[in-house]
Length: 403
Image: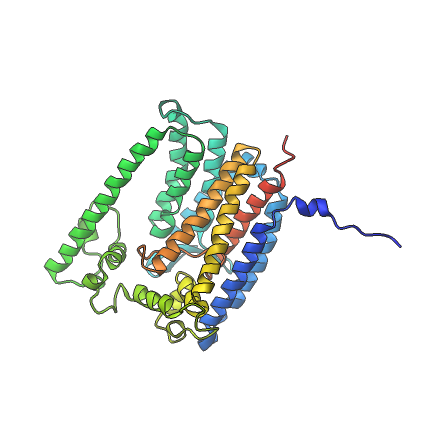
């Protein structure tokens, strides 16, 4: 009888850590979404399952494609991201909750900012792979080109406005500059600039609070009166979120305004205990205290912690941290600079999303609309994360046979 042999060599060329982490996170996320909607028979978990299958197919395709193709064609990919960002101000744009962040293509709704994060990371990694950095004076041209790659998508995302997504790109850029061995003087100058920026925002928010007190206004009871007098390009609702983080009792003493979501999130996380309340047992989620509009996406971690407890939340965090660290491991194994830089960018993108999302859910960071990788409901970000990890898988698969 003929003997059949498993393609052990083909299997060994694949990294198994990332797919296992992704599948575990997806299963955990779909379970949490289903549970959060069980009282009103929501069907978001079915949509998430469909996006999961589409993401799995895209993951395999990106893993099979030679990642150097993205390096060679980084400019067209970058242009696609810019065009998608610009399209939100056309007839394809969709307004939700006072911001235009989505476009509708036929029956598909897409969030261009999620795509632009990856295309911008590709362009920045490609630019740094072509030029080796050193002293700041010797690297001015490369840094200038890098700035013109970074700034347009960042500005377009900020103007939507989408402050959460705008916070993701700067750490990716800094990480890429760090691993490209740029002079330490640049980071010292940048630290001073960052301190000045944070101080300017703090002063602006303090003046905003005084403006509310002097005019007898509530934080959520006016329509952008202060932003017209401020030099900083922040919306008043963004200032409200910062105030709700810094001093929730002062800006919202009754807890029914801008700090409502944060208060309910903290109650949900705290009431879960060690093992949680069980599937469908989360009172904050099931009774709607944690609003249904955010319970399955921005605050899914809160719903997860309430029903799965500390143990379930820690498992999710361990899987996300493992996935990010595994990307850094693959970056160290990459045989070319583009592969190394892009894997680092992928690790930072996942890490920053995790840090910001979990931080806002437990009150350590201001509330921003940043989803949790592979867990939060939403097709755009899930598809982008699968494509991102597929490209990192391609880097791993070709670590030994590059010419």
